[in-house]
Image 1 (cartoon, rainbow, N blue to C red):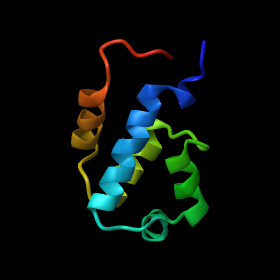
Image 2 (cartoon, rainbow, N blue to C red):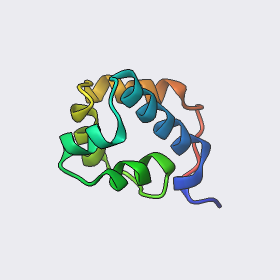
Image 3 (cartoon, one colour):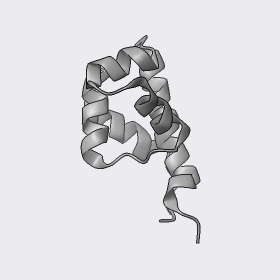
Image 4 (tube, one colour):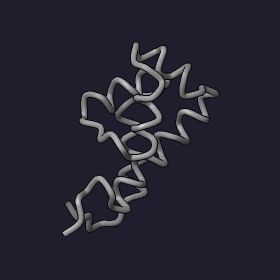
Length: 85
């Protein structure tokens, strides 16, 4: 069974976050500054090297200027009905 970090579902989450960052007109460096984290943190998240937990997702969404619930709803709407974990 594959680790969920590398599933299509997790890739959907990452694609949604990257699109949100780009849509907000932010670079990885600008987003990392808003979060008070080094730029490699954002790079690792976006490449799937570093897994996000729900609190980090919330903080990232807020730093993007997005409503975390609406951003997560975008992820959910793109996911298949059955997701492997």
